Amino acid sequence: MANKRLKKNFFNKPTLKVAKELLGKYLVREIGRRVIKGKITEVEAYIGTKDLASHASKGRTKRTETMFGPPGHAYIYMIYGMYYCLNIVTEKKEFPAAVLIRGIEINQISLASRLAKAPAKRAPRLGRGRANLKSPSFSPRRSSGEAGAEAPAGGQNFRKLDGPGKVCREFEIDKTFNGEDIINSNKLWIEGGEEANLHKIIKSKRIGIDYAGGWRDKLWRFYID
DNA sequence: CCTGGGATTTTCT
DNA sequence: GAAAATCCCAGGA
Image (tube, rainbow, N blue to C red):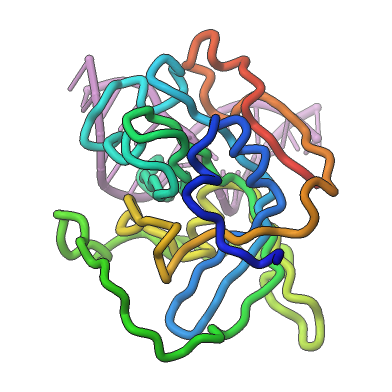
């Protein structure tokens, strides 16, 4: 009941609603036999072409194409030349909107339960070939003081990822995931969390978008403790 | 506690 | 050519 993958109808709704509902849900990343799972604790909404904080305010470009696509797909972009950010596209096709995943609490790293499983059908691959050759993707820098960086023997595997760049670094998500269908993907998806709203949702202004005119003051950032 | 700068590359003007 | 939906580290209060 709780560990159920979110389907398309979950994302095909008003973005603010989806953003708030994503809090407490679990982001799941399967890498070979390894499974990384963590609770979403912080998100931001980017809605439409008028929202000056959204990349889609530039209109339909090569970069924003994914945002104009169907809901339930990942929109990945590189930021400041060093980090990737993960968004989930929301609302109906042709309407550009997405939820940026800014914070996650990792509480599980386990092994994939289902082993042999037909590789599935999809493999369109972005036109762009051979990525990964020199992507900064994983740990461009070794941080010494990360809380819980080392899982103490017998201790809980708990890490707090406070920032969109850290989330992608930890989940090993790079630009090849742009356009990934997280409703059908076997590498990245989102599952139901605990009880609906055990948490109090806190609202605030979005981070790092002071250039967005009046849109800078929208309380479209949501987080829980 | 806070502030400021450097890293590094894609994207759009 | 400038700016960017960021992060980390150093230095000062």
